[in-house]
Image 1 (tube, rainbow, N blue to C red):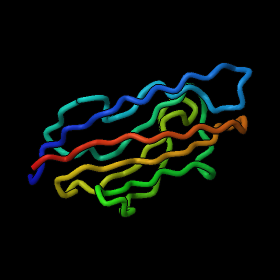
Image 2 (cartoon, rainbow, N blue to C red; image 1 turned 120 degrees about the vertical axis):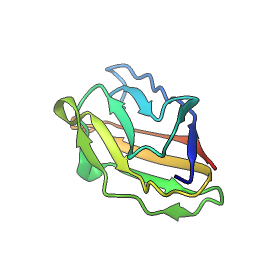
Image 3 (spheres, rainbow, N blue to C red; image 1 turned 45 degrees about the vertical axis):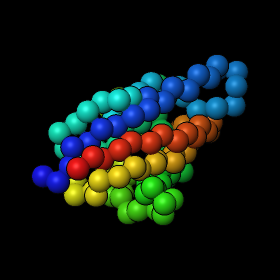
Length: 120
């Protein structure tokens, strides 16, 4: 294959029940400084509660800030709490950014950004 992936940033969001925000994001995949042999099939954001897929988005950007195509996001996990974004396994080496925004089923929202690198 054409790349060994080195990924970074493990996003944590802390919200209290009284704040107008989405469920706590527990984990992101790829996680901080994790090294992979191949580009993962999906980016994964894991939340403590169900996500409203119809009102949630993720945008993959290249190093120049240009939006790149991804597969259609989908949910998995307990009660639809894992938001997944399919990736192209033949991604070129470089730095990528994921901008995401989710709406929980109870109407609260959260957003974030993280970067990862695909190395040759």
